[in-house]
Length: 536
Image (tube, rainbow, N blue to C red; front, side, top):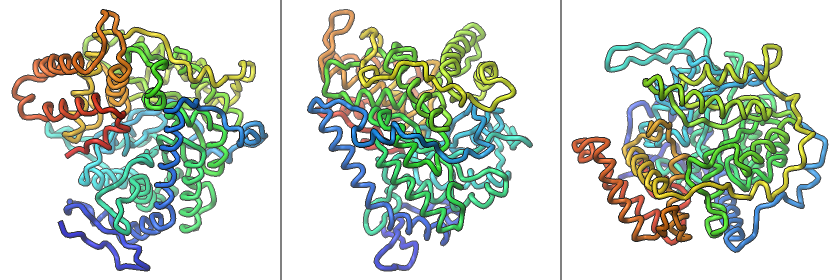
């Protein structure tokens, strides 16, 4: 396809569009927005490759037996007396946050959910086709201006309430490229695309609304990557004559290397950051990836990997202690449970959610995530009880009485079962999720849980890990290529029965099975599902 030049060449710094035209792109790819994106690419895109190379180099050291550790060279930062800058008034109370993709109905429901924050997600809950990227930016623009509405096929109207949640935007991680636009012949960092367009089209209106351009930053692996984001923020603030710290961010601590650099991440971003968040599902996924070569650190059935287990409990408590020492909020992670219409089953769901959120609030978290509006009240009741009406958060809880959390606590795998049923469930969830992803849906309700890219990554990497290390299951079977292939055929038949022959035939389950087999039997662990296949 012939490339469309979006602007005249200036010192060979050219942005080119590689995607077919889609409706609405002229509203998003305006001259001003593209000028900002071009400048950001010119200043910062080249460094992303170096940052990713640093990740790969560090992983090679882990593969050879080195363990993650607190950095000796940044000890002075960890032991120093300093705090982050101010937290805006509308971000001080974040006791319940809801997340979801950037389609119009979800944005309206999220903002109307009575949660304190709605995180509009261009990352794990989003399958980034060009049309959806453009429409997502339009949807957020309309939401910021209070002009968003939606009419369902059944004729139901959706509009914003008078009072809504604070809006935050999660951009994609540094590992992802946006192939639809190239800069000097190379696909641009997807993070810069998401950030530049959301900021440019909304910062003025957000500030007029009494809020601001607020972002969630995912999948950081080091404070050097946080420094890169700090430079991006400072550059944009200066370019648009904004006070330093106008842009605010929350960083997800969802990789194992990052948990050893939380102080340093806060320090690098101290002008712009307000909080860290326990991105628990990606954290488990990262644990598997980090120790992919270590047969002594295998994780059990996914259902056994809960936040009360040692390495996850240590991670949660260390995040709280670190954040509160630096004046930053410490947010808990996502409960993947979703409500059900069956009253008995729903009561069990609510009990699970209550147990999870009570643990977070009792530990000292300032807030938590839910995936469904029907769980906002349950989570809110718990955090209201711990925080109370006279406070906005739990920054006063320092956890100074805790013993220092050592590296060995963060690295020790949790106990649990390795079962045939657990392997089968991982195969089935991975199959159904990959099929949904290939079809353009990145957020799927499966077997009572809301599955997104992060939870699906756990399933397919556990499969790879068990095969790669020939794990013996509770029934005595060895997880090898032969067993996996046999179970894949059987579970594909189960999925066909679950969804019906017609849907199975007209969907992408066969393609999903081929991809899952390739990833599971590959000699090297595939880093991310989006690196293997993109949605249509």
